[in-house]
Image (tube, rainbow, N blue to C red; front, top):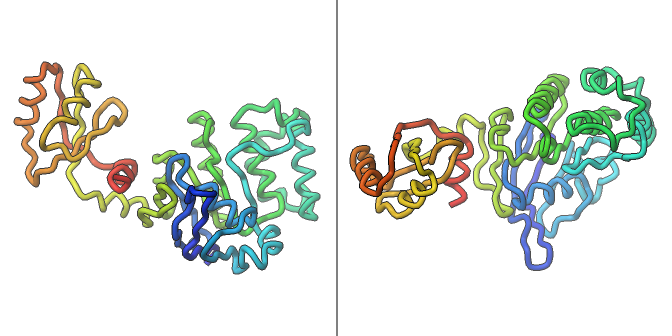
Amino acid sequence: MSIIVENISKSYDKVQALKNVTFQVDKGELFGLIGPDGAGKTTLFRILTTLLIADEGKASVVGFDVVSEYKNIRNSVGYMPGRFSLYQDLTVEENLQFFATIFGTTIEENYDLIKDIYIQIEPFKNRRAGKLSGGMKQKLALSCALIHKPKVLFLDEPTTGVDPVSRKEFWDMLKRLQQKGITMLVSTPYMDEAALCDRVALIQDGSILEIDTPKNVVKKYPKELYNIKASNMYQLLEKLAQYEFTHSAYPFGEYVHYTDTRSEFDYQELYNYLNVHYLDNIFIEKTEPTIEDVFMDLAK
């Protein structure tokens, strides 16, 4: 196992950030920690990268205890925090050289590992890091996290605030890195990115709700799910909230995702109910759940 987490808890004054968190990450696995802001993802990352000490529980990374053997861990992992944390006044090349020097290596020694990423920002190697676009900053931060050839890579919300094209490019890069045997723990608030992981842990309010492959997580959704839309979406949500058979109803893109309390859904009765309440252009169809639907159900 590359990462072992056992009953980790952490509080800040009266706020409990993590509650008995337990999971394991296999060697070479791309494991996703999926949850909204404030779920406890960053606190857990800081504990695993030896920047924080847990109140309870224990954890190890590549066989080293996060408290007693923290120096070994710092030489064995790469960490890309959510906020861009490189030196804004240094150029791209200077940042990379700086991090290589810290770890007692050179850009040339491990260039093969970062080559696919670095060639995309190499034309801007003399530009200050603070002047790069969001996508370019992301690639530079990943290059710096990899320059010492880590065994485990921690990526804390690496695509937050990045455009969709750069997000896709970034995940393509992670898949290529995985083929080189690097274990990765990635946190993200984007539910669509969960499907790109080998396994995911859904986390909310510091507690793990579910751990499984993305496919199996979706299979566990307990109810039939329906797409509903109408000419007035605000009124549609309001009336569904008042409907006696509503189990859940929440916005999902251009639709409302709806589940019913009855074992046999009555399409015509719901249609008539909405129609009586002056809703027009009513559309109802069965749909397949996503990880976001599973998360919403578990979070209830």
